[in-house]
Image (cartoon, rainbow, N blue to C red; front, side, top):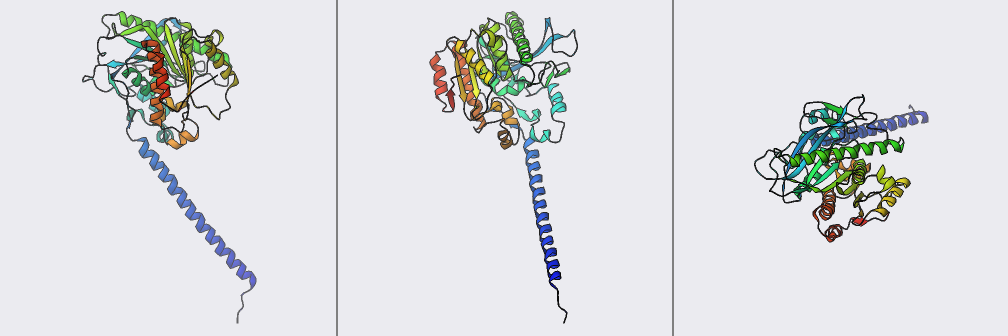
Length: 411
């Protein structure tokens, strides 16, 4: 009889164990590949679906047009070479007659092609960022202005590096409630500015300094942006007086406000500090810079903030808010919308995918995205209704009281 030794038993056992482990690894690998393919497929399908942005809440249809304006009085200090005048791409949303005007594309050419080339060319970005050609806003292309009334004017500035058209939801909502909303793209700071003749401007080192750099870089930049707003307001005044203009007699230039997100909020406060034509401003979640901090702002400001609970914060930034806020005149307000984060105020909240990833990295809060943008829109309209349309401050406090997520701040 042949007997099997103990060593042979151990050897056979090890082989069986290794075989089982290889089987487990193969199953795990197959499962991982299946999950990865499923995730890629989910992102692929989602990134190619048509996206309709939230509808405006006001009674008016919304028209949109654009202008390319050159300030011949200023050399552009942000341009990469000397001798360039400051040139701005300006977008205007307004209350419109709901006639047969065609829809305005979310990103028109040549901006669409430039944005695709710069930001959607990689295999990953095309899965997580929606192609602007698939986004549907609610603007009409250049219809007549509604009625014979004059409408207040709100100058809008996007965040650092952002595009004005990425805030179409906010702009359309305010325009639908009876406002001219005039958005200004920032050449050499925005990711891309595309003019109608096909010229494309991207960031420059001077226009897009690192956020870790000295504060003086942003004090200088906010002053340039404020001067942009003043120039655009002067051009709007000329349009209102021009009998051949579609906006002739339609702009209430005694009722001018400023609205901006992030660095655009700082620029809006700065513009209102420096230009006497500005009556009130809203800073959407932006730290303050420039003369607004040094000398204060003699106009009412609303600090409309997202939820910063759990963040370490910026001690100097909070000190600046406190200093400016305490010196503001009557009509000031500071509130925080709990459950929101920095990008809940623009269209990227709806365009980026997947939602859980945007929340995981802190770009979006836990609140439903449509409810969040509706709260911001209502708060913005209520503040400007008080300061530009002469409504009672009770209307503003009533709007704030409607939402349990809105909390008064004490800097």
